[in-house]
Length: 159
Image 1: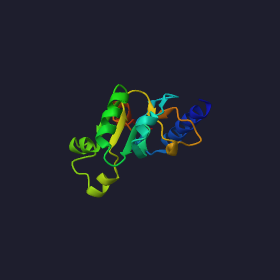
Image 2: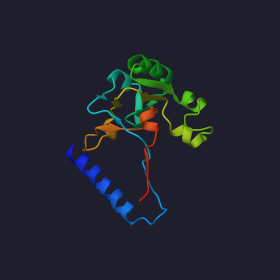
Image 3: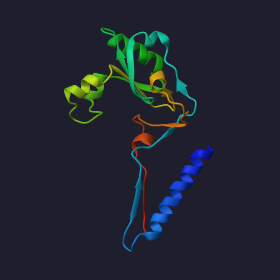
């Protein structure tokens, strides 16, 4: 939209201004911390029957953790996989740790903060959590494990 385009133009001007004052032999590297996926208004509001098995949600809209009620983790995982397996990788905390999604070692205090089930979107959607919504509608999202989100843009330029 208009504001996004204005921000891109401002960033382009900033890069041009920095390039104009760089000394010979210097280079400018511009990067981001992650990529983006255009989601638009494709936000999935989870089924209330599934949320009845959840005490809280955490994470990002594209990597949504569900913290299961005591004794309900396996049932929640199966139900979430049946409901959302076509648009997300539905994985357990144990699977994420065993498959080293966060590296070879996840410290126990960190593992304890993870939810029991993760909905990791591979379709261009996000999962809604009313506690994780702000006043600004987001067109693009990040946080999942798709190439578009994991590959980091890099621009290298010399004067």
